[in-house]
Image 1 (cartoon, one colour):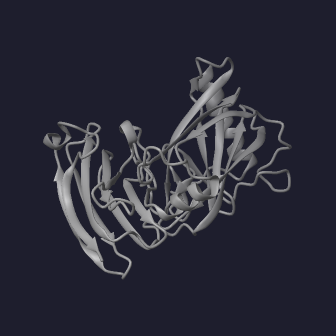
Image 2 (image 1 turned 60 degrees about the vertical axis):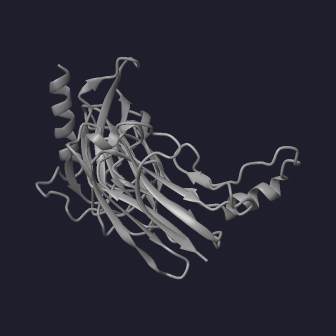
Length: 314
C-alpha cells in the first residue's frame, strides 16, 4: 500500500506541476542524488504555480551538516521526514529547476512520518553569497505543504586571509589538518591548531587576570583558526577541505604543517595536498601524499600526522 501511495504522489505532482522531466538537471546549481528533476523554480509561497494552497503535509525534520558550502562541493547528506508525505520537493530559490525526492520509509520514531534522504551537490557555477534552500512536503493526492527554508552561505573554495593554509583530499576519508604556529607571547611554547583546538589562542599565564570580553574578542580575531573539521568521524559532508586562516597579520616565526589520516572511512586510500599562501602572496610549494591504511595507525592527538612542510614568516 505504501509503495502504491508513493507512486500516486509522484504522478500527482507530475500532473500538477508540469511533470517530472527527462532532463538530468545539469543546468541547475543544485544536484540531488536519487531524485527526479522538474524544470522551473520552486517557490515558498502561494504566489506561483507549484503551490497548492499549502494544504499538503508539513516537514517536521530536516538534517544537514553545514550551511556553509562552496561551489563544486559534492555529496552533502540531506535527510528528514514529512508527515503522511509521499515525496518532498527540494530546490534553490530561482534555480533552473527543483527535485522530487521520494519518502519510502516509515520513521520508526515518529508515527505517520515518512523519511527521505538524498545527497546534495552544487555546480561549480553556483553564485557566491546567500542561496535559499526550499523544501516542501507532498502527499499522495499531490497536495503541497508549507515550505521549510534555509539560508546557505556559498563561499570561495579557498577563503581569503593574510595567511591561509589549506588541506584538500580526493576520497570520502577523514583527514585532519594540524598547524603548529608561533606563540606571540612566548616563542618557546608554540601553539597547535587542529580540530580539538580550532582557535590558536596562547595559553593563559597562571596568576594573570582573565581577559575582558573585548580583550578576548581581539585575541580571537588576531589568532589563526580552523574553519571546518571535514568528514569528522566518517560523517561524510563532501567538503574534503580544511583551512587554517589568519585574517590579521600572523605572528613571525616558523609554521609546521602536518596531515593526520584519522580514518579512511572504508576507502582504499586518500591522496591529499597541502598548500599555504603567505602574507606577501607567496605560495608555499604544495605537499602531496597518498595516505593508506598504515597512515591511520598510532596517535591522533596533538603532534599527530605526517609532516607536509614548514615555512617561516619574518
